[in-house]
Length: 383
Ligand code: SAH
Ligand code: SF4
Image (cartoon, rainbow, N blue to C red):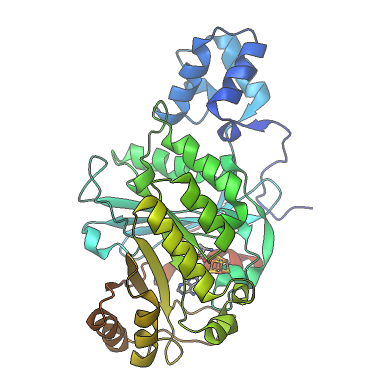
């Protein structure tokens, strides 16, 4: 019924799905004293334990109860791939129902190389050495952007908040063994985070909790295809999380040709929603731009984009397209990318060109899961 290597279906609760309040309620029902919930929470999110046996400060009876009632395993590792310079690791996880998701760790010696920089400088958690995680919010994606490997897969399902949290915990535990910590988390893996709004936000809240993992809101970046009502809701909530909008075109017809969502939300509506977000939060918005040779990388397009973004507290993050099997578009050359940036900047819009990491390991969003679903995974490193 399930592909090989699948995890066993379980009816046990995924412990990462529980918020502190729910965990407290469960432990109270088990007649545990009030302080136990805090001990479990600290074990999970401060000590990064990943099995009940590690909770040496808990009585054996409680550890046994946890083994019976909770699972710590959100997924199994199906494949992982390291880039040739070892700076990037991409892991393909298999969920208990057989669906596949990806999460990528990118190590940066120099923060200027980070293709997913957050406006707030890293400090504390490894200021110079960035460890950026790119995680998934859905298995597949319903938005159908033609250039995107995840879009080409289609929508499978939303991830639970615990499945989102578990991706961070997986890498946090791995980095801990090397005396390192996660410095940034970007929601730029598979899926559209604003199409799974509640679970994404509760994952952020859980990771942000000061008594737990204590990961600062400003270290998260949400990237959205531009779902207008959710941008407004996000603005109203006044979160300190960074917001990136995947724009990729400066004209509605051109955007519609590569991003079906533009039928529903036009560029003007997205920009209005961004204005509202900036008014509410005073935070800078990033516009993501995948540079596609001859499609959206000309100086004319750059000028059109600059005119649309004029006066907005924003920044353009342009990355040459990562070619995918299902789309014939090609990556822009470095030269054309530089001209695009120059044109935007002359018109007053700040722009960075980021080179994609890990192209040699199919690190573009959804590429590994796409390959695996076609049974063509690049199996140079296989567990
Ligand atoms: N669904 C969200 C977040 C996941 S995609 C969104 O679309 O924003 C993360 C980023 O990767 C987006 O900016 C997306 O447009 C971009 N992307 C997807 N496929 C790409 C490709 N083949 N080459 C370059 N960027 C790509
Ligand atoms: Fe979905 Fe983002 Fe890919 Fe578009 S680019 S299909 S929204 S994951």
